[in-house]
Length: 607
Image 1 (cartoon, rainbow, N blue to C red):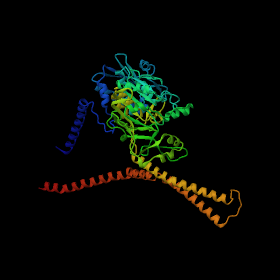
Image 2 (image 1 turned 30 degrees about the vertical axis):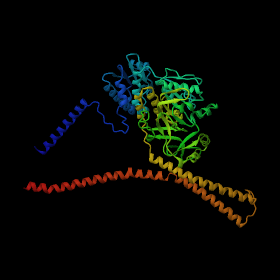
Image 3 (image 1 turned 180 degrees about the vertical axis):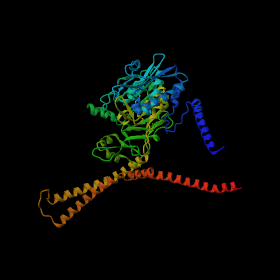
Image 4 (image 1 turned 135 degrees about the vertical axis):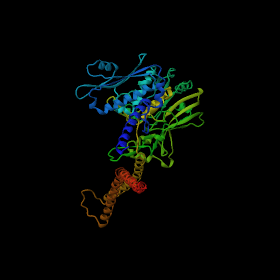
């Protein structure tokens, strides 16, 4: 065979093999996926698979997407393809229980009427046409659930939204939740009096009722009691809650030494309210030790904020940003969490002689200390000074939320098995700490809702949705940079206090010199050489101290800027240079091998 025929034969065989392999894989491995993302964003979770497997009857999913003019919106068109591909996975896993239908609603067509009747929202586009992109789910018993608009901003939460729709169709009878407390859940003062987002989510998935402050018993039909910042309770009311728990009821309790959400309500309405909350006898009976006068300050988990005229963000140890290592890894409520934001939180501990099991769910870092709630409240007017209230010598890890299970004893009531979750913070509900709100859209940047709603789902028995809520948060914080920022801030604060004290002393000395000599701004009194020398020395001290302060501010980000320069050098020059050097070395090696092989080939041909 000639060389030319060999090449063309090889190309033909490769083409046939390529086409045949694609046909084989496409026919026998239609569900095969290779997901290399860290959080498996493109792989259906086990919770989704469980809900699909437990569907009691067939479900029809109708995907409404206006194809006309979609070419003008390539990002939305690509997202629509991903939605459809994901729905195809759902259908293939359901073994015929999920039927997928595509509906293309154009203007003035029966499909448009169908979309409007289903509750799919239209969006006008530039040429005056309309555009639909939503999902409707129906079953045979008139069950119906709708996602009016599949917004691309919700792409990280796509699987949760789709699976939640299926879950609602499969469970038309919503679990009942009784809510008790003084937290402004239904009238958020920071959102024009609208409900906080987590409360709206609860209303969407559960049958929610509110208990009056003068209650005498917990509704027996309630699947869960949610206590959020309770007011003063009588001993009989606390016993009523304990009785509910010991008869098999579940509870999710939020207390707080300093509720900033209540504080904002006070500022908005002018009405006084208690910013701290506690249920002393009940918590003690459940084996929980909690002090409403203590606030956790954490140097390592502290968020950075801008306050007043500060140009540089400052460390704010009252607002905590929890990361993966701060969540209970074995509890289904917290195992998948990646980030949470809390504010002015208290802490919990096992009570002395407790008979219940105390399992931490949320914890501080090992750089946390305790400060009095009133001192923290006063320090909020000077956020930079709050760092001075931290006590690094007595720093340790504190429990911020815990699951309580097992046998409990409550004074005057008796004993019994309980199952509840207690959280020492209520600002987890505050929208400003975890979600950006737009026009009918939510863009979470922390897992606050995932924690609260996951705890509700776990305690009411619908745990398959828990893992799905946290898959959308793809935050990848620069932890090294954050630690460097905090360390720089701490060094800055310590030196700043010294320099400011020196500046104040110098200014005070200057004032005394002028007053002592009878000087003022308009005086012409002649000064002696000694007096002029003293004043000049003090002026030099003041100028030098101010120069040091400016230098401290300029050096605050030196280490961080140097790290950024090193990373830029590594990405822009070092790594490409390494790849180029490797390619050159590999090419030289191949060339040498080829050169060595040529004499051997020549000798063989001569022989």
